Amino acid sequence: IRVQGKVYYGSISKPSRILGTLLDITEFKRLQQQKDDFISVASHELKTPMTSIKASMQLLDRLIKVDPTSDKIPQFIDRGNSSLNKMLQLVDGLLNVSKISAGQLALQKTYFSAASMINECCDHIRLAGTHTLVLEGDTGLELHADRDRIEQVIVNFVNNAVKYAPDSHNIIINLGKANDMAKISVQDFGRGISPEYLPHLFERYYRVDSSGIQYSGLGLGLYISAEIIKRHGGKMGVESEVGKGSTFWFTIPLA
Ligand code: ADP
Image (cartoon, rainbow, N blue to C red; front, side):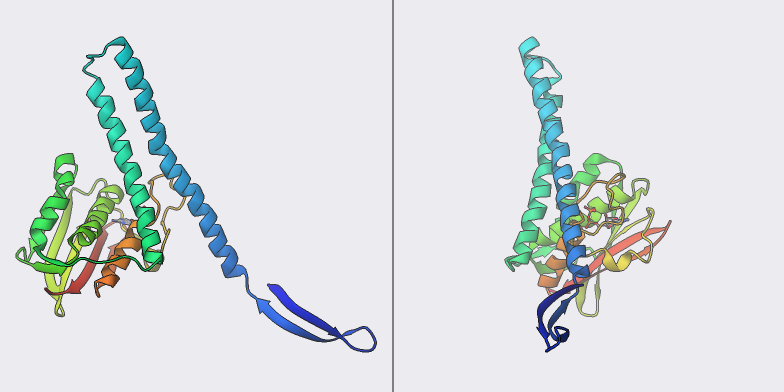
């Protein structure tokens, strides 16, 4: 506790009156600690792809000098490119957070088919071949929303399913309607999340495994997704059972 104010003395030099405020700095310290942790995690997350780009460039430089037609050249260029994409994603995440804080997350709404949007934005899953996306429910569902932003939410759910449920083969995306709202959910059959963590998942910087040893990340994806859904006038939620898997869902007003 920090005390701020003035002490008034009586005639016998003993304090007769203290006027001031008691400031609880526990919360202030927690936020400061969270900020410090975030800066260290963010620097580490950015440094990893940067180190990989540097190594690829050095190897490319050496290779081109020795054998300018080497068939290994495209491999190093691909590696550098994917690290650059990783960096761009991280920086985009940070920029999104600044936009949210400044209240500048503008939406540009159009009409589009949910199924074709999902097929386009999740093509990378098919190409990677590690998981199978199963589209279920009302595949004729039409949305009136900011297509890029809704894609961002779905890609975040799907990428998390791939990252946190590596051995779960199927990822089920369900399209439907609930209480006059469009509802989309993404279900995986991975390790699931313990109930005590669930209320915090959509907080800024929150990660279940905050050490980042097992999985890398900044804890921003779900926070940004929840803000996007809120701006659309919808709701976002999660149901999960340890050892069985998780279902992340959102609703937005029907088109
Ligand atoms: P990040 O993945 O960068 O940590 P997110 O905001 O996307 O950030 O996710 C926050 C946390 O929620 C993750 O750190 C992870 O612990 C947990 N999480 C998200 N999706 C899943 C999932 N499908 N299965 C298990 N845990 C998940």
